Amino acid sequence: AEKQKAEAPQYVGCVQYIREKFGIPIRGDALFFRPNITFLEARPNDLVVFLYGLGWQKSHVALIRKITNQGIYVSEWTEQSGERERWVSLNDKHIIGFYRP
Image 1 (cartoon, rainbow, N blue to C red):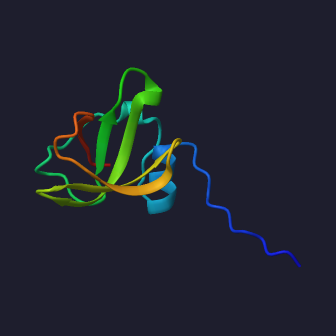
Image 2 (spheres, helix red, strand yellow; image 1 turned 90 degrees about the horizontal axis):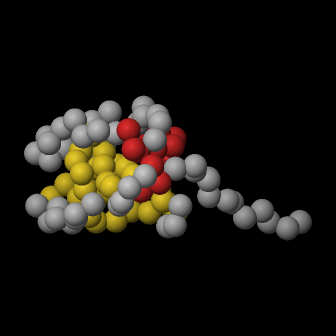
């Protein structure tokens, strides 16, 4: 019998990924997440809100896992990269703010 390769779950977008993988109760498009907390208030399980240009497909949210004075460690899903974790610089010019669900 041929072994079935386990396929990674497919997500429609960053919001669905955070909701389904981590159980964070968010819905809708990343475009509609308006920052509602400051960087100093942000903590794990809050979101970083990014804007990479104009239009809904340029909006993005990532789940904060850890914050240090060196940066923000996030879990995210993008169409280009799929599921990943990465460090984001505190000076990243694409960060427009932070959101607490």
